Amino acid sequence: MAGFCRNAQGVACLGSAALGELLDRAAVPTPAYVYDVDAVIAEAESLRAGIGLAHLVAYAVKANSAGTLVRAGCGADVVSGGELALALAAGVAPGRILMSGVAKTDAELDQAIAAGICAIQLESVEEVQRVAARARAAGRRARVSLRVNPGVAIDSHAHVATGHDEAKFGILRAELGEAWQKVDAAADALDAVGVSAHVGSMLQTPGPYLESARVLCDVARARRARASLEIIDFGGGFGIDYGDRPTAPPAAFGSAAAELLRAESLGDLRLVLEPGRALVAPHGVLVASVVQGKLSGSRRWAMIDAGMNDLLRPALYGARHRIEPLERPPGGALYRVVGPVCESADDFGEHALGDPLPARVVIRDAGAYGFSMASEYNGRPLPSEVFVSDGSVTKLSARPGVETWVKRRLDA
Ligand code: LLP
Image (cartoon, rainbow, N blue to C red; front, side, top):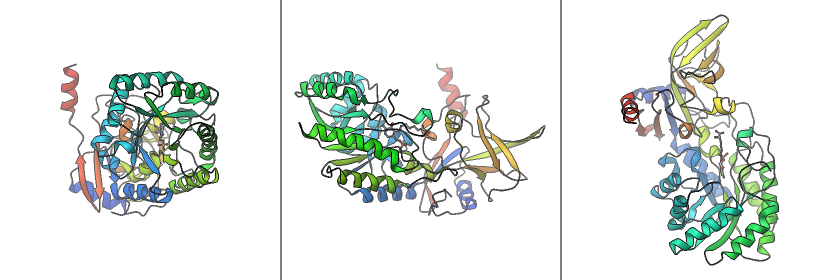
């Protein structure tokens, strides 16, 4: 199926009615995430080809941890033992996995060291000795890179900006000297293979990405004057257009990064990019049923069966996702779309659903940070997930019945 998600980047679209039929045939209970697997694979392949296959696209698994997507051909950027185990089980080669995270536990470090991953990204001076100690205890060497906090502030929601001086992530430039010293002192246990940075999410243009990358190039050059280096990791953060912010496509970030590296005379380093959202967000939708309408004063509400527990982004970041009727084009009467959760923040904003209210709606651009941030709050089981390839459902994980939730909580 050539992209059922009518996304703002102009991905080819199969009408929503076809999506409705597909869900009916598979008897999928709502709320349901539906992913266009072919489009995700194509997105990943074009980015990989764009930067050159000698370099590495390490998909940020946190965006969507579905095995089908983790297997789409990229490496993996993981932030927990769970994500690491998933990536390995999905067949991602250890040499294509990087692990970030400001508070990796000893057990997680042991897991990464035993697997022999490409790099454990050190996020503090303190972490250097912790990793060295775990490697010694295991009788192995650990491949590490320093995650630099480049001191670059970006124009994004405060919750997703990570590369400024106040952030908990990475090592400040002023503290890099001390970090390298500690790494070198632990040369019996550590291989210092790289440097990395990640300034945050939802970048509209490559500008701030390159600003951070330039800082990283300076750091890499300084290090190389004294020691060898294999990889340089510019991080993720490529934005997408949720319908109101024109955004450069992933390829523009990729080619600008590869070009910069050449211009900085560092083209022989292995470039790593860590996109999450841009690879999956436009290729997933959340389908919900309209439970009922409500006319109250001058307000027209549409109550749907998906809530902030299924898609947290609007409540957490004030994010707006386009919502449209499933079986007809958007337009007509505006409705305030809200979910069933007992929180006023369970509100998806105003959308042109028209009269009469449709039976089902589609919430667009929900392929990233949707299911992966979902919870069972209010006794609501996790939503269904449907994987579509070549026009048919290839995998379906139906929403568990409430009995499973009741049993689990009863036993608690
Ligand atoms: N690398 C690192 C070290 C990260 O922390 C992240 C995201 C990524 C890569 C991938 O960033 P992306 O390309 O997806 O922007 N829940 C938020 C996004 C949080 C991103 C956290 N880190 C949202 O729904 O917008």
